[in-house]
Length: 111
Length: 158
Image (cartoon, rainbow over all chains, first blue to last red; front, side, top):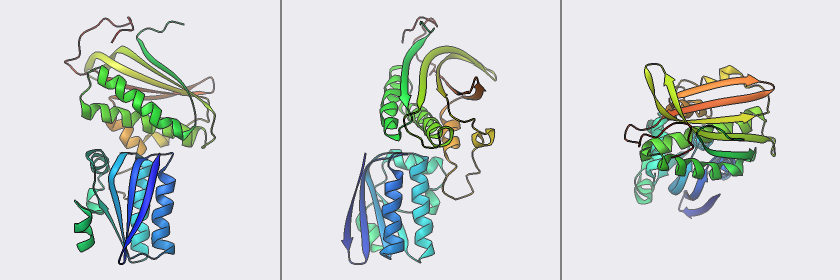
């Protein structure tokens, strides 16, 4: 199960994602992230992943798609609150360096 | 039917919602066999990705199709290593999976998709795919950690 709650602060959208981003649920994450960039034209989208228990390759693919969509529209996508499990998967994928990753939401908002 | 060294047998259907249940079962099994936490996570990830591949590719996302998952304690010989290991076999009746899909992709190629096979290969010591009688059979093997208690193979014990 995955839950996504959206908060808005100034020109940023913060997506609080909890649960498992796996084959069953990654399409929902992808959909919400793409809507922020392509339809809402949000300049800065912060994905708060602190409550994500598991992420698989389809979940990683959703994050990469979100990042590419952000670049297409000149916006920014940031990741915060990476749990050791999520960090491990991104590291294994050699994708840590392509994402903007911050320890906290406050740091991402300031950036 | 008795199966030597059988630890766990699951009859599943090709529904993505079942993946979290399988992850929990494999995590518990691996922990009980003495795998360190990092190895347990890697093994669980490998099984999860392999099952996801069956659902997505062999069954083309059609729900309700049969998948059998068997976990056994075996003595494995691979390359220069021989010893007790956990064998996980997944059998499905989907379409033949093109061998190319078992190669993964270069990690420097940043794009969505193609990571699953990389996660599978990272998590286990042996990956073998075969097709027989219209069934796909994927065999994953991970050697047990050295500190695991020695037990006779084929007794179905921990």
